[in-house]
Image (cartoon, rainbow, N blue to C red; front, side):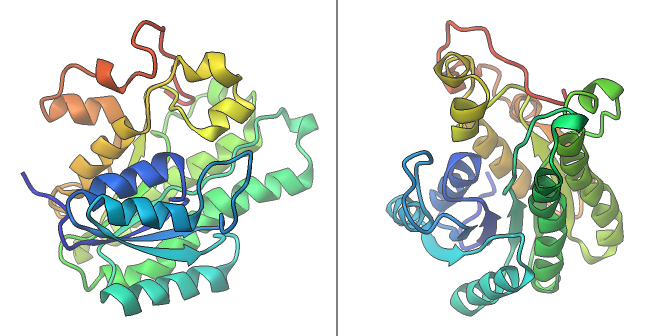
Length: 273
């Protein structure tokens, strides 16, 4: 099977959770991974930093690079991209994973929270893609993968938390536009989203705590699905909106029970699906 050996991945928000899981899956192939995140110092509420992520990547067989990068700031994005290119010689894959979560109704959404989710989710995705694209144009089999939902434009996904939904669908519209814009360059641009909630710090801290966690799947299901997509031909796989379990089933993995935190618990569906 194709793998990511020798490829260089630039992954935003890779100090923990889904981003780290994607990094570690690529590391097992022998990939280079730039961990572009803002977690420089330990936080008791959030496990992992860019430095602990690099340690895990190196231990898994890859080469990690800690890049302190808050995607709200264009200069930090460009500095991280430049360090990655100087260290590894280029960028083959961009994973736009960094995301801000804020679930509130319109009247309960302060301007600063509206600005935060848009600055991280859609603006950060756009600017990071923009910074990586010149290097992706020179790569063999280049990919951009956004962790964003399928374009299910239904009122039920917007009414409860309009600001957040706008920002996540904004990431998906980046896929729609960039896939066509860069098709002739052979750069694949796709989206990946989990069908169920994933066991991350956001679920524990913001979406129901331990009870919700046991009804999640582990981040490795998204990582395995991402690996499958990123190993495909970029000229034959672009402009798609994938769900993790569909990708794995299409690749021949029918039993997904090993990904469940608690195989006896009923799984929680994620937003937007």
